[in-house]
Length: 617
Image (cartoon, rainbow, N blue to C red; front, side):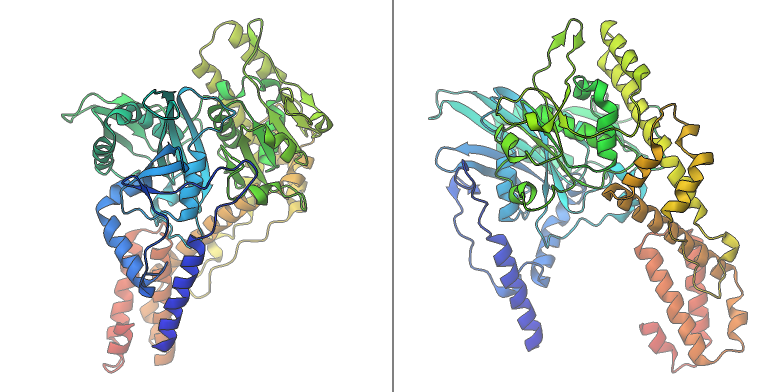
C-alpha cells in the first residue's frame, strides 16, 4: 500500500513539473499568454489532491466520464479555441469548448502564439491558415485503431501532434483601446482534413464573431451529431443550416481515382454541398512561382531534407508546406513539419541550435528574423508576392546560400542541392501553356497532382515489389510451429533488381535513380515506410497462422498429450486470440469464434478441478 501511494505522489509531482514549465523567453517575445476565464487570468493552479495527478486512476476515470458525452465530437475535433488579444497580457485564450477539455499550459501557450499572424504579415480583414504543434508528454492518445487501420497512411490520425485550423479576423474598431478588433477561431484536431475544416470555418467564423459563445456551443453540439469519420464512407455533415457531403478516403482506394459523386438526399435536411476532397490543396496555386523547380522540391521531400519556406503571410507559408508534404503521396512524410512556425514556439531552440546539424523538419515562417537564424540550414525557399512576367507567374531562381544575408533577401531557392533526376520539361511546358490559355486552377492542379503521383509510384513500386518477395511462402505457415519471419531487407540485393524492374519501366524521367534510392535509405521516410510494411506483413503472417490452426485437427493432437502440454496449448491459443483482437488483425470473425469454441471444448475435457483455474484466466 505504501509503495502504491508513493507511486501516486510521484505521478503528481511529475505532472506538476510538466504543467508549470515556464514558456520560452526569447528576444522580442511579449509576455506569455494566459488562459482567461470570465475575463480574469488564471494565474495559479488550484491545490490538487495527489490522487488527481496526471495519469492517476481518479483523473483518468474523471476524464473518461467528462468526455463520454462528446464521443462523436472528439472523433473529429479535440476542441475549439477562441484566442483574443489582451492589451495587458498579449495573446490569450478566451474560451475553450468543450469546457472540460484538458490542455496543458504548454499547449495553451503554443496555441496562443500560433493562432495570430506575426506583426510582419500585416494581415487585415480575414485570414485562414494552418499550424501543427507537438502534444505534451504523457497525454493520453486517442484510441482508434480501426480508423488508422483503414485510412490511407497520409490521412491517419496523429498520435503525437495536433493540427490547428485558424480563422483570424483583424479589423478597425474605435471601441477598442488598441484601435483594432483581433480574434482567432481555432479548430484543434488530430485529423489532417485541411480542406474540410477550413470550409467549416468559412461557414461558422463570420457568424461567431457576431454571436459569440452561445453560437459556438450550438455549433459544437451539432458536430457532436456527426457520424464518426469512417474510411470509404460518404457522409452528410450538417453545420449551421448547411450540409457538407464528404467522402472519407480509404487505403483500398485506387490512387488518383475519380472524385466523390453526390448521393441522393433522403433526409429533411437541405440539399448537401459537395466537397470534392477533405484534404487536398490547390497545388497549382501553391507551386506557381516554383514550377520549374518542382523536381528538386519533390526530391527534397522524398529524402526528408531540412527545409524552410519563408513567405509573406501565414496562409502562403502554411499552404506551401502542406503542399510540399503531400507531394510524395501516397508515401507518408515521416519527418516533422510545421506549416506555421514562430520564434515563440517551444521547439525554437531545438530547431535553431548551431551545435548540431539541422533536424529533418520542414518549417513555414513569415518573420524575416529567421533569415539570420537559419543561415546554416541547407535549403531555404524565399517566396514573395506573386509577380507576373507577361501572362506567366515569374519563376524564382536557385541561388547560392552565401547570398542569404540580409533581411530584404530576394525571392529564390537558396541551396547547393543537385538533383538526381532531370526536370520534366514536357510537364513545365504543359502547365505554362495552360496559364496562357486561361486553364482553370483546378485543372492545372489535377495535372500537377497526377504527375507527382506517377513520379512517386514509379519510385515506390520497385520497393513494394522487392518487399513482397521477402514474404515467406504461404505453405511454410503450419499450425505446429511459430509463424515464419519476414526476410531482412538487403539494400544491395534491392539495387541489383533495378536493371530489370526499376522505375525506368514506368517513368520517362532519366537520371541517377540508384543514387536517389541509396540516399532515400538513409532518410526517415524510408524508415517509416519499411516499419509500416514490415508490421503489415507480420500481421498477415499472424492471420494466416490463426487460419491454419483453425483448419488443423487440434482435438486429435491432444489425445496422446499430457495435461501440462494441453494447458500450455490453451494458454498460447488464448494469447494469440487476445493479440489478434488487440491489433485488429484482419481475420474473419468465424475463425476467432471457432478458436474460442475449441478452447472451451478442450477446457471442458480436462479434470474438473483444473477447469475453474483455466476459466478464471
